[in-house]
Length: 236
Image 1: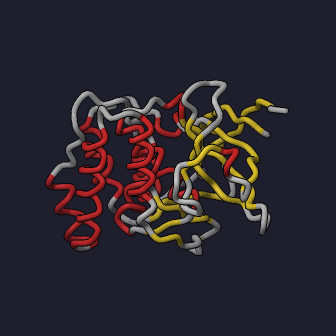
Image 2: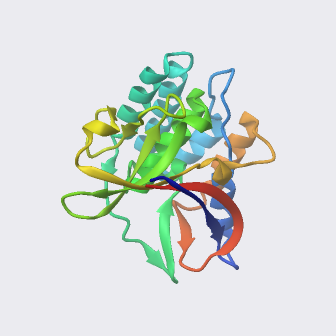
């Protein structure tokens, strides 16, 4: 039985200046674009200078993938986003500092080319929103791996409210219906849009916030939270 509830998201009482900058990045809400995505050259040059040619190339390829997908059928967009993000390497997130669990922001994930299941899923969400897929069709979903009982995040796509979801994952790199994923069990899913709410959705704002996030590669996710927003969650 499905059970609807609300979960709280938030941030530490005293975030560092970098944490505040990356939180700003996460508050970008890419809406269905009428025009191709254009990452600014100053941003790309900053990436090159700070992180090297490979990181810059990944951002350019991300931009090309998004622009190639705009206007295509949604199933093709899902495959393009899934295949591109799955080129990254999986790593556990072993980074801890002063009681913070450090997670990569979407742009830092692309720059590094590696991350854990949460970072893969959030990057896919961010990419599909830029391609024009409506937020109502996407759910960040925590699952349990049947063989190990380990927690694992995937991105679920619903073509309609009552449709069987398609699962975007890196364990099984094909976009498959949930019924074909016997290796995972759904725990709960949530609407990610409140995380990305922003007062401005202009592309110039996106570039500005991406550039600000480059002060460092990781965003702190604290163990202690102060409620700042709520989002709907569905438990299975």
